[in-house]
Image (cartoon, rainbow, N blue to C red):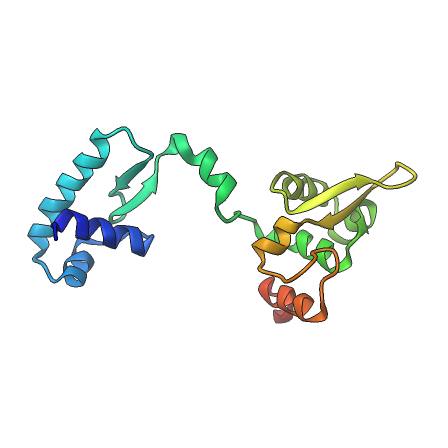
Length: 172
């Protein structure tokens, strides 16, 4: 097996920045050999017209180039701040909930959180009957993201408990 391919496998599987000495230990190869092969591998990645690169800022990691991040953001787990996560928790546990009620519970920043959650596809927002507020509820993408069973609109007791654990509500 080619040493560069073995290093590439290590970088791919670890999914995090790895130091030369760690790669050497994993592959049972001298660190200098790893460094030489790594430099060659970096040149290979940078010379081809692909979506991946090897970054060496804090160790070595295979990552998607910046110009392809819009694709990654559509497919990969969603980054959610703690404040937005708390707002999502309220929506999930009280759904359907009126946006006006959510604002009372979470404050005026809830409006920004709702906008972000709608953009991420985790909640839906529809005008209520009188047209003065919105009704908010989770989407199938929400259920998929948190690995909940069944219809996201009707969470079972077990799923609600699991959601509470996932969102660290039980730590309060």
